[in-house]
Amino acid sequence: MKKTNEPTGDTGFPVYQCRLPVSRKTNEYCAGLLRRHLKTIGSRWRRLEPGQIVVIVLAVLRHDQRIADMAGGNQIGETTIRRWRDELTALLAARAPRLDRACKKIVKRGGEVVLIDGTLIPTVRRTGKDKRPNYSGKHRRHGLHFLALTDEKGRLIWISAARPGRTHDITAARRDHILEHLRAAGLGALADLGFLGLDDDDDQPVVVTGYKATRARRLTPGQKEANRVLAASRAPVEHGFAHLKMWRTLAKLRTDPARATELVRALLVLTNLEANR
Image (cartoon, rainbow, N blue to C red; front, side):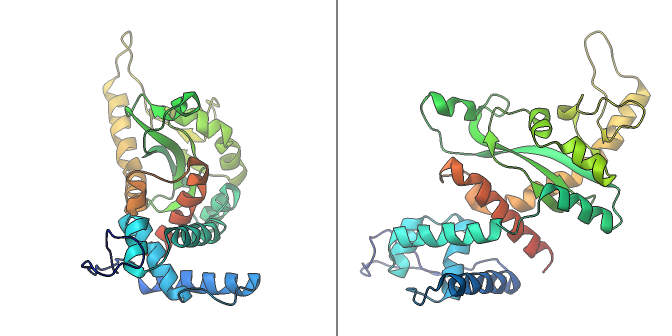
């Protein structure tokens, strides 16, 4: 992989190569996906072969390589690489599982419980009144909120659409009708205190949360122990987010927020491919 800080076509400055830590299976899957797409749309010519295009796009996603650098190192226009990136992410995002199908898949595997949590993907700071909702007071930074489900081992099975960073976990869960989908599939869910009050069925709760202490009511030893057990059971969900964020383009999103949902769902598909290699 070559990189330079000079404009496209300038070869008078040094370049260097770096290793792309992506499995051959993932690379071949993406290349095959792109080849079928090009055949479908009748595209007879590209500046590079599909395999080479995939390597460039995966480098941008995995290493967060600047598009201007990749363009100069490969003697390709920046606009072309952006178009390739958007094209491949759209193809991958279309294969991301829907919530109802993801729940049914867990049931078929014999699973009974999923883990649910929200996360903030940082973005560059944007000005204007319409961008103010993207500021998260909890994290004290601008970003986009995503809700995700994992299985008991922390493997991501579904991720929501992007929402403003100030969105609360329980609000996102209600908008995605998480409770209804879980009941329809016969699944339970383990969640943190951010989802307290989501499930108001005291007889047969679907979403299990911990106990919250208040100034007027302290937790009993039994409640504290229950919180510790729940926290240990929920730990794998953080591993799922960690695997997703190994794609360093999520360290700080520079893309248009309108494309964030498509990008993150494409990375979900790539993460699962890497996990199953």
